[in-house]
Length: 208
Image: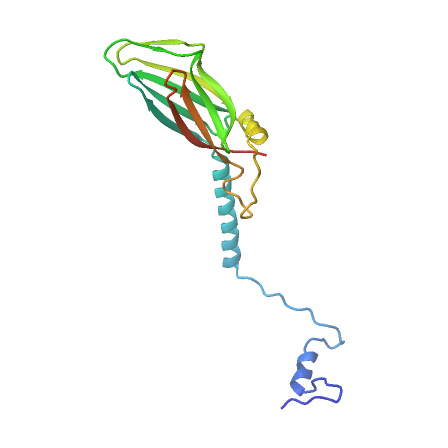
């Protein structure tokens, strides 16, 4: 049974020994020994941190895109594509027209072959023509014609921020693997009376 003095302090022999063990012969407090972590645990933690960092750099740096969709009409098939390579400053937009008739086909357009609208948050933030100033397209049987346009990535991102009411979301974790990328719709509309259209969804990143 432990004894207490009239002042209320513990006076047992074991308690005094425990207190005394914390001081050296000169009455100075002894330095506490820090518990060393096993080398394997330290190495495993270091390896994990390096692995996460490599994955982070790989995912955030890999901005390559290749998306394609086909718009079919009675006379012709239009293949609409958007692509970019790693570290590229532009999106490459291509429109390939392929006749599916065994006779010559003449297609008529208003001002240009098609318009491409980039839509974010249900807002048209940027529009560009493709096949500019082409109002008539003649295709031989099974003929293929390709048209291209470039879209500056920074320009598109700036329009998303200014016109699309872009608001940066709160980070869910210390490392954000998706970075600041957002989903954008690229809508192709043929400049014909029918206004046939096709849409590609893709992610654009590095918004600030």
